[in-house]
Image (cartoon, rainbow, N blue to C red; front, side):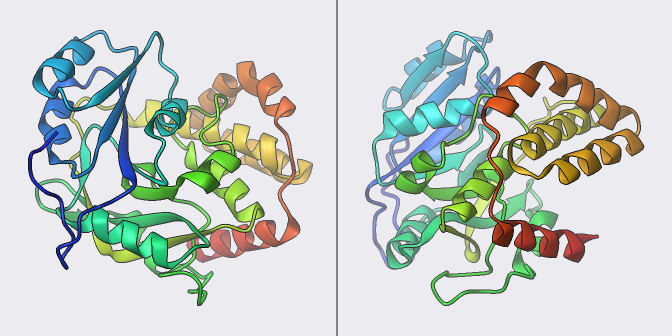
Length: 293
């Protein structure tokens, strides 16, 4: 871990927060990004075969490494939260990190807004620091800005750039073993909203994201997203919405059909976890869907 003393713009250091990073076969990216984190780090290794665990333990001895025997997907983050044991947890990918001082500022914001379960930072992408398009959508959220939240209300988030309240994250079940990755945020966001927790976009804190060149091909990633979308619908939406999601997947062509086929083995696990979300949360989801249509 970096020897720098991470402080916010007022000179405060982050307290009671851990950065949890889940990674698989991204040794070089990790060795570049881990020293940038300004709080204790738990690295959960998803069964890497490229020597990640040994390299991190040698080069970054202050990092807590939790090696897993196989790839657990996004659930690895939940295991990292359990190990962290702090009031707040910041998630980062192996190719993302919080801007200097902004993690401490995010913690202060969370402390000031007790209903806030998830703070989504502004995400700047690549060396050219492009604003992630999803942040534009979040800033214009049709859900408005409630007085007890520090920014526009959300019904979703981007896991590589959020600070979460451990109490809320754990009570909502964390990331589950059914959805895995990508698209793992939707089910958790729905459950947080159902429990009355708030999620907000805060443009004044920044996360840098320099996507690794070793990423899945676009078609393969789209299929994985459809898989997650369908399994989430099966776990939380009414039957009519599940049917519509399946029709949408088929209409999407090869990625959607492939995603539906990939979802089949996990249907029993989704059904075991099935629980409809409240009508108010479904109404908010419809408002968001209409605004992005």
